[in-house]
Image (tube, rainbow, N blue to C red; front, side, top):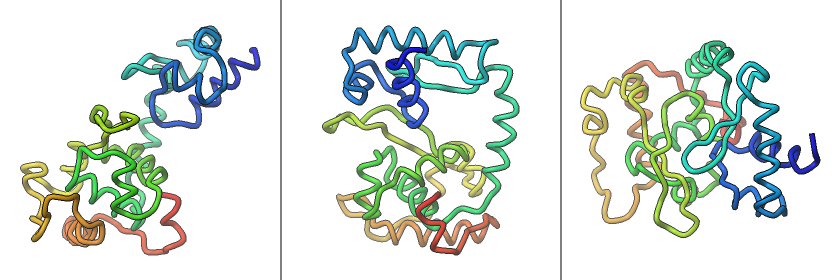
Length: 204
């Protein structure tokens, strides 16, 4: 595999979001034609029946996902991960998405005051949040919302309409500590495990 293809493969591997040719070109310092050629090579290497991970076109970009023959094993692992305790960082991020969603990573980071990459990825893997299109703000970042799995886990019969009301939302996005406290109370009611150690907050 060529050096260009290896770079593109690595970029697709390390990101959880689909990347289009322009984004790949900017990150790799390659031309878009070079990226397109590299994508063809990566696609051949990661094809159904050849690799456990396949390259697919999704949401206007390219992403790696589990192949059909490996999808069931991956689903079992993700289901196991979903049963692991939520860190406070992940819970806080989930609360922001629940009350403010659809919301982007930059908005989540602004509300929490810290980067949201690890908590968002953890929640995506658990199936508690999902992509919900793109924002019309500069850069068109991906938006995230809670899932029906979230509704089931937290016992929300009417979805988001069942969430406890925030006393003072105002016109801006809600305060992270307020929504976290409300969601944590819901978690306790539903028996959802919350991980206490602060050391884990930057990981999930």
